[in-house]
Amino acid sequence: MISTQSIRVQTRGNCDIIDITHQVTETVRDSGLNTGTVTVFVAHSTCGITTVEYEPGLVSDLKEFFERVAPQGIPYGHDKRWGDGNGHSHVRASLLGCSLAIPFNDGIIILGTWQQVILVDFDNRSRMREIVFQIIGE
Image (tube, rainbow, N blue to C red):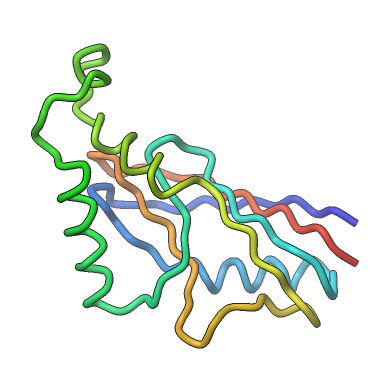
């Protein structure tokens, strides 16, 4: 069986990191499926999805990492073409990726003790983001 659901999340932009583990957990539980995989997908080109240990030190480390790897304030071809100043956001999102597959058993997602699922919004302004959950299982 396949179940597809989505939620909307308001973000602040500028490398806003949001723990969405609870939403993933609820969506899988509410699907009524026992065993399978949930794919978490963010339908935007300046956002990403991954897992981390969601604590202030690591959240800060991630923000600093992305600033070192794809800094704001340098020339990007995207900015030259569109003039929207978010070229760094697209590069960062491409590095992180837009989806994540998580197994579940007995209706419970399988994560490590210190793993949480996060949404990272790299855009240069706040936005309403759509996250799609596609659950495949039995």
